[in-house]
Amino acid sequence: MVGFERCRKLVRRATTSEDTSSRYPGEDRDGVTIVEEVPVETNTYAEKFPSEVPKEESPADVQEQSFDLLEKINSKVDPEDTLPILLYASGAVVALWLLSAVVGAIDSIPLFPKLLEVVGLGYTFWFTSRYLLFKESREELAIKIEELKKQVLGSNDD
Image (cartoon, rainbow, N blue to C red; front, side, top):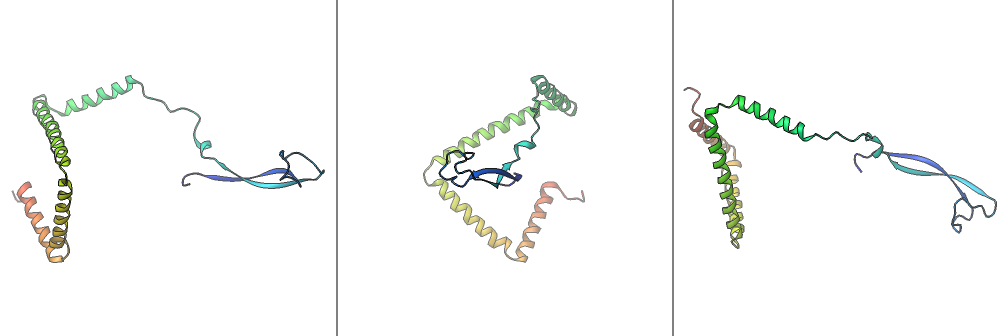
C-alpha cells in the first residue's frame, strides 16, 4: 500500500515441541520449551496523526468571512453597475436551465444521441485530416486563428 509505513518487529514466542496439538502456546507438555523469533508487521500509519481533533469553524466565523467577501465585492463594484450585473447573471441562469431542458429532451429521443456522436466523430476525423496532419495545413489554421483574433479583439495598430 502506498503511503503506509510498515515496520517489522521481532517478537519472541514460546512454543513447545508439540505446538500443533496444543491449544495454548504457553502449555508445556514434555518439559521442552523452544523460543523462536517471529516477525510481526505493524502499521504505524495511525500513530502519525495528532491526537487532537481539528477545530471546526463556528457559524459566526463563516458569517464573518462571508460579510468580508461581500464588503470586498461592494468596494470593487459601482452601485450603478449592480442592475446590469444582476440581469446578466439571471439571464445566464435562465439560459442554463433552458439548455439543460433541451439537452434532456434530445437525449430522450431514441438513436439521436448515437447519431450525434457519430457526427462528432466524423467531424473530428475531418478536422484532423484537414488541418492537423500536414505542416502547411497547420500553418493555414494558425493564420486563420490569428485573423479571427484580429476581428474579435481588434488589431494592435488601432
